[in-house]
Length: 313
Image 1 (cartoon, rainbow, N blue to C red):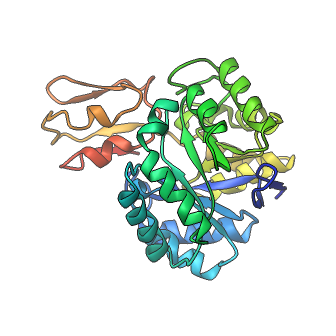
Image 2 (cartoon, rainbow, N blue to C red):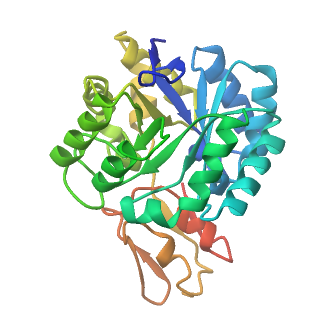
């Protein structure tokens, strides 16, 4: 596994970061034990860091594997707005992940300079946590071009985690060319950049090699987080990025995996999930209806459902 450095001052990590949303209760594809075993498998094969978030609710699944591989780095994120909320988020992660120091901590899904101003208290707390040695690097995640540009100019920011794929799926305020220009601007300032939604939330799974190669070749982007829920997916992605020929049986198994957002029959149509969908892929009929073309399979809607009706399967 190729090692890269995140920006001028960030850590050295593997080019692939394990995106742990795929092994969280939000997506429900694997059990807690299976998730822990999958992480260990990934670490044994050279993946040196894992991406999570408070909303993923999977710290307990990560902790056992991280205990066996203490050198593995962890990224987490929080939607905290105030300083007090951020303190609680940081302490929750430190305690649950059994880490005195968190490697990277991000403000989750920042859209622009305006949203960053609205999270000023949380950002100040992140800076203070860094100065105290509780967090090593701080930054933002974003689905927006404006978020990347605002993050690049944010005082004290080390790392940006942007949405990026070769079709521009999921960019909320612009197009792919604009996102690439914003990332180049951020990279010129020496910031660490690792991409998310490289496979478009599963929509690009049938063209994985093209999707990975696209991000791999972008000079401004040093690494990528990939959500993986099977050993086959780990083996496939590692082989592709290493330039190795992929075994045909492995290729077939990975390509034939089908994913979709499923709405259970017991859905009552309460509508609480609709505001949780960043893509506007949900609307109400007699129950919630999914626009599968717009859905990025992020799983955030499932968190808002009081009856656990929404799952990615």
